[in-house]
Image 1 (cartoon, rainbow, N blue to C red):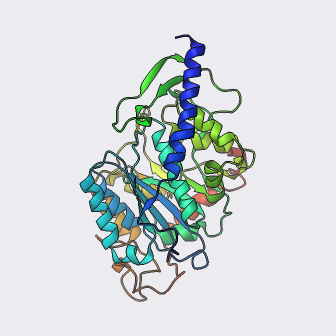
Image 2 (image 1 turned 90 degrees about the horizontal axis):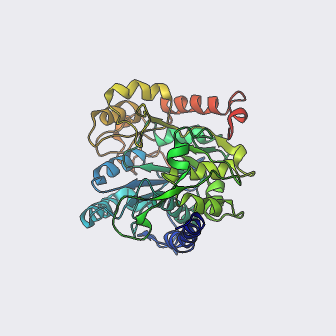
Image 3 (image 1 turned 180 degrees about the horizontal axis):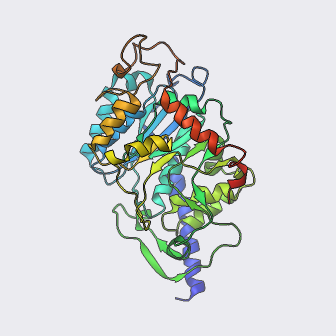
Length: 398
């Protein structure tokens, strides 16, 4: 097959993916959600800002997902959980029962599970499609200010009261995205190769397929790369899903055949958009320790990293293995959380009582009450540094 015929076949493949696969994902429902009913979650009038979370997990991650959800939970926010298609029916049932039987989740109605699981391969475009799917569902379902994507291997380093307080005075259009235009080794390993992910048309995970030919770098837009984890504004999320310009769709077609597309798609969209490139904050608010030389996955964190967590001033860290003792230390010293309970917060803490006793509604001081702690001050230090005159404009989309 000649290069022209090969290129045409890939364009057709990408076009069909855009027309058929992604729209189908974006219209799938959330388990247990009835769009005719009013969700009983406190709205923006009760709390300064609201976050919408996507927490993704795979086979064997249910217990990690449960723990991460409890550590992240707050009645002001919304939580969409996704167990990918590789997870067993028993694991899905465990998660559904966990959400349904928790009295706080049931009463507040702000925790949902994606009903029809997507097959997710982390080197292909399916993870990107899954993120766009979650954005679309959350945009249709509820009002929020920022979208945060996490995995079950992530864990918070601050309470949600800390996070809400730290974001309460920020412009609502800011996007926290780690990025760079210096692709380095990714130029030849990811920018030029062409691949197809069989997960686009099968129900089983398999190795991605490589083409012999390589493509030249684009001239219509500039490539960026960075972290797959981010905090995105509602306005930019709407732009990616609805796209009043054709840029998000054009880049979605391009990244269909791009290795590890979640590490480049949103960065390239936002930095090539005249409306959003000046809203970027070059940080994903995560603490991540990468192998050197860099590989596909970050190093697993442990007790030796605890002081680095604090000095980083980050809101989240990854990745953690299940049952790692450092999670207990984070719960105890940073989140003031006991096993099986929620993280410290004004919504569930009584005056004069131990902050670790956060077991749910009924003990709180009322809607809209925040009790931020040292985590809020640490996070504010980081954010203020990132948006200072010295760093903010000078480092945008460079």
